[in-house]
Length: 115
Length: 130
Image (cartoon, rainbow over all chains, first blue to last red; front, side):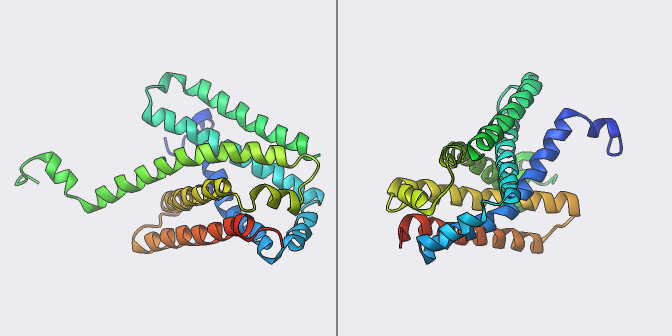
């Protein structure tokens, strides 16, 4: 099964990979996020200076991707918790669809408010 | 194993297995806390970015707020438990990294995230506008 491409094309495998990749990306992003917020230690003006830097289009695209990753990691994680801890195995495809829908809805809501 | 009073006793006697179960539980419990925090965080950031972010708006909401301090303090604590344990699994399964060195790196990631996370919380809640 390890080398079977059909297993890797399965929706559950895709959900597994999305959760792994988003988890690693979010963990790598966290120190940057904490550093950005800590700019407030040097005063409101310093934080404003950083926030003006984030107005660049590429940074905004990055922010939308991060919101998508955060929503996807949360939704995929809740699906995994439900599969592990609740008798909902028959609902796994529905939960996968709900997790995907929630992720894109959060990303779209953020994007529409950002632009 | 055959000298053990019961198979259950033999299994629970393994410190490594107990640690694995403890880490699994910590990862899942922190995930439940994070799910609530992330949901609130997403709602706040989607609302807050309307019309652009400013330091005055961010600090006006968080500065001196005990409620936000508790919320973000808990958020950081849960992330500082959850993220290193997730990284530990990824490093172990994808890079075949095992043993004490992996444990040390996991703990260091957790300590780093907790320190810098709580420092960021202090920056927006405790320090306030300059």
